[in-house]
Length: 338
Ligand code: DGY
Image (cartoon, rainbow, N blue to C red; front, side, top):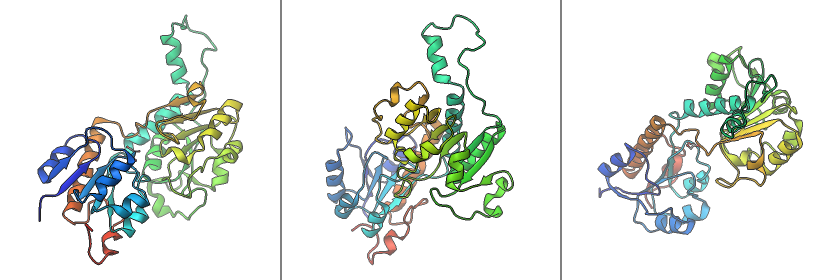
C-alpha cells in the first residue's frame, strides 16, 4: 500500500503530529480552511484521512463529494459531522472518548462553584481596587452543599460530575435521555445505585438548584433548554453547560438572566461559537469560559494520541480504536476509500 496521506486541518499537540508523520505524509494548511476549501480538499483524492476539529463542518454535501476513507475528529463530540451521511458515503468517523471525562467534569464543578460564589465578580472587585476591607454583606453567594444538582444525561461526564458533587454534599438527580426518558437499572447505575434519583425531565427542571447539561447535541437535544424550560426552573437556579452550545437557546437564556427568571449561568460552550448572544457578556450573573472543558496539557496530548491512532488505523482500512460509525465500511461492497 502507498503511504497514507493525512490532511490535518489544524496542528494537534504531540504525540499526535509525530505519530502521523511517522505513518505517512501530513499536510497542515497555513491558515484555517474555509468551508469551500475543506470540501475541495476532501474531494481532491489527495488524502486518505482528514484529522479534523469541531469547527470543521462535514455536512451532507461535503461528505457526498469526499474521496476519503475517514475523518478523525479531535474531540469526543462529533456534531460537526453528519454521521449518517458519512456512513451512507462509506466514510468512517472516529472520536476521542474517555480521556477528557475528568477534565470536563472539573470544569462543570468549577462553573458550579464559580457561579454560586460569584467568583468572577469578586475577582474583578479586587482587581478594580474596590476591596476596602471585610464587610458582613460583601458579595454574598449561595451554598452548594445540600443543594440539588440536576444532571441532564447520565453518561461518563455526568457521572464524573456527580462523583465530585457528592463530595461537596450535593443531592443528585438525573434524567438519562432528556427530553424523554429510558429505564436505568441498578446494574447500570453501578456505584450510584441508591445514591442518585432518576426523575423525568420535567421534574428535573423544576427541582434543580443547579441544572447541568451532559447530553450530545442532536435533533432531539437542540434547544433542549428553551424559554419554557427556563421559565419552569427555580428563580434561584443556576444553569451549567459544558456540553454543546446549541442545546441551550442562548437568546432565551439571556432574557431569563436579565429578567431574573433564573439566577445565573456558567457556560463553557455557546450556540454560535465563538460569537456570544447579544447581552450575554454584559451580564454579571454569568461565568463564561472559552470551551476549555478538555484543556489540560495531559488531556490534550491523550486526545492527540487517540486521534492519530484512529487516523492511522483508518488510513490502513482498519476499524479505528474509537469508531463512531463502524458500519460505514460494511455498508459498502468496496470498504474504505472511494
Ligand atoms: C469535545 O471533545 O467534544 C470537546 O468539546 C472539545 O474538546
